Length: 418
Image (cartoon, rainbow, N blue to C red):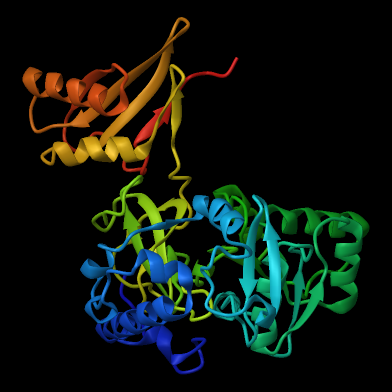
């Protein structure tokens, strides 16, 4: 679809429609300075990047050589070096807020305007200054409520800090206050609207919604569309804030202007070609919390081209599942890193996928690998390498190129839980 450049005022700021090459050059220039600042002010990065010259990291290829920091490691890092595992570049007492997410993982919010950058996503949804946002995300310990509130306040919008629960009160508050936009999980808005209809309330002013934190299914999209509602979604995490968001074009999610996103092969830091499903790795260009190559554990893929809405940044398909696919086989864990090691030993293969099943009471493994042609010798070498790497025996099935699913899954556990 052709990209249409929109007139001034249709974007949150001038960054959204800038020339892609100018954006890339700006991001890469910021990256080198960001790494230098992180090394100077965050002790964690001073250690893990001690042999890295910041001024040499000015390209995606150079970035891909840096180590990952995994979200799954934050609990251990923070427990060993409280409160933030020495990843932040600001004294904890100077933070605006400190959140506690399940794990527990402690998430910082630095002082200032819209630290989590959700104003951009809310603007794309259609929220404007002078309007009212009905915010049903929680405000207790976890950051989602304040993420959306700070974004709305940066736009000049009022916020109803509703939090979750109590459908009748939610519906009555929207009807009384004449709220314009909803923020919350995808399905909760439907429940509020249905409660309002049951009570005979007028919710006609609520025409827009911004959803995240749950599955936004095609059937739910259709339900809102039938009622004339514009309900768009975003993708983010408690650590990173906004990563990507939908516009009214509804073709993928557009990256925030302050992140660099890579899609890597699960279990590795190796970037995948555009279109391949892999793990989302984010470098956050925020000085107070300079996360560098932060592996989220989420799966997605890059969409080619630009959004028809005129925003020119890279797009991803949105959340497509989890990348942490470890499976316990015969009492031993098999991990994506091991399958990635196997793939590196056989670079001529296409996609590979280890399927874990059960034959009677015995766990089994079958390695499916895309190969140019059937080759018994290759299958035998793969089986030998699989056993050497995992310490477990498995069979090998060679598949035609392009025949395995492009879903980012390298370990599939199909055992039924009885």
